[in-house]
Length: 461
Ligand SMILES: [Zn+2]
Ligand SMILES: [Zn+2]
Image 1: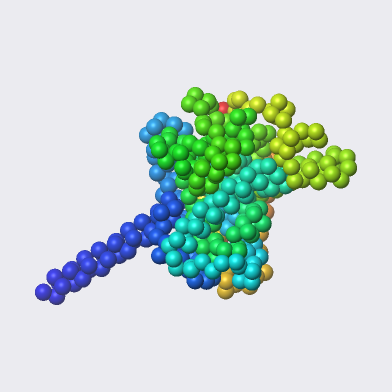
Image 2: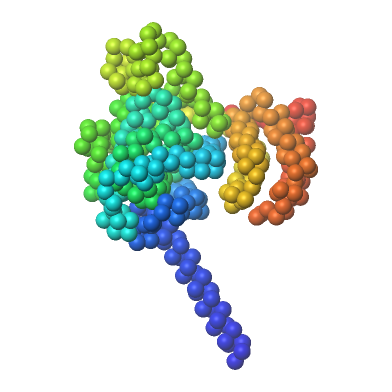
C-alpha cells in the first residue's frame, strides 16, 4: 500500500511539474507572438516589470534548433557557425550593456510620466494594455525609420543589418546602444502611457521581431496585410537598391502602408542581405563601433557647419544638394556578391564553440549575481566577456594576431582565477578547476601555435 501511495504521489508530482513547465513555455511563447495575457503582463509600478527578454533565451535556442531542422529538411543552407556565433555575441553585448545602464535610459520617460502626465490611464485595464501596444509600435516605426535616415543613428543600427545571412540569430544582433537610439522618440508617450506598460511592450516588440528573422516561412497569407512578417522583414534586410529604406514596421506593417515606406517583396528577386558596403568581419566589438568612424570622416570632409550638421543628422547617402536620404542614381546597386567566409577546420570550430559556451555560462553567472557583486568586479567581468568575444571573432576570421590574442586571453583568465578565484566559487555549471584545466590546455595549444609548431590550415572554398 505504501509503495502504491508513493507511486501515486510521484505521478502527481511529475504531472504537476510537467504542467507547470508546459504553462511556462506557453506563456513565453505568448510573449514572443505578442498574444500575452494583459491581466498577467500589466503592473502598477515599472519596477515590477519582469525581464521578459532575458527569460526568453531558452526559447531563442529552441527556435534556432527548429529553424535549422526545417532548413535541413528543405535542403537549404543551415546557419554558418561563424555568422551565428557573431550574432549571438551581439545579443550578449546588448545584455551586458543593460547590466551597466540598469534602465537609466528610461529615467526621463518615468520622470515625465510621474510629473507631467496629461491623463491617468488605469494600469490594470486591458484597454490601456492595447493602447500601449499600438502606441509603442507606432513609436517603434519612427525610431526604426530614424535609425535608417539619420546618419549617426544608422551608425549604431547598421549592426543589425551587418549579417549576410538571414536567420533567427540575426534577431539577436542588436546595437549595444539599441535602447538609447530611440528614447527621445518615445517621450511623447510618457504623457499618457504608464511606464510599466511602456517597459513591458518594448520587450514584447523586440521578442516579436526575433522570430520574423527566418527564411523558413514564405508568407503568412492575410496576416501579411496587417503584420510585419518574415517576408516583409526579409525585404527590409536587403541591400539591393529597391529594398533600401523600406518596411520599417516592428509588429504592424500598417504604418509603412500609411506613411509610404511599404514595399512588397518581388517573387523572383534574390535578396542580398547585409550592408551595401559590407564589413568583412566576425569581430562583434568591431562591428558594433566601426561605422562611427564613417560619420566622423564624412563630417570632416564637409565645408560649413550646415553641411557638417547635415552629415550627422541626414541619411547615410545624403550629400550636399541631394534629398534627405540621397539620390537613388548615386547609390550602389547590390546585385550579387560572395559572402564573407573563412572555412576553418572542424576542430577549430569546435574549440571556438566550446569557448563561446564558456562565455555564455560566465555571462549567465553574471546576470544571476551582478546585483550582489562589487560594481568594479561586474565591469571587469563584462570587459573579459568583450575581450573573449573579440578573440573568438578574430579566430573565426583567422586574423594574423588571433593566436597571440587568444593565448593572452587564456593566460589572463588563469591569472585572475589564481588571484581572485574566491569571487567565482560555486559556478552553476561544472567546478572552477574544470575551467582552469580547459584554459591551461587551450593556452598550451596557442603557445605551440605561436611558436609555429602547430598551424591552422584554412580550407579552400
Ligand atoms: Zn533596420
Ligand atoms: Zn531585422
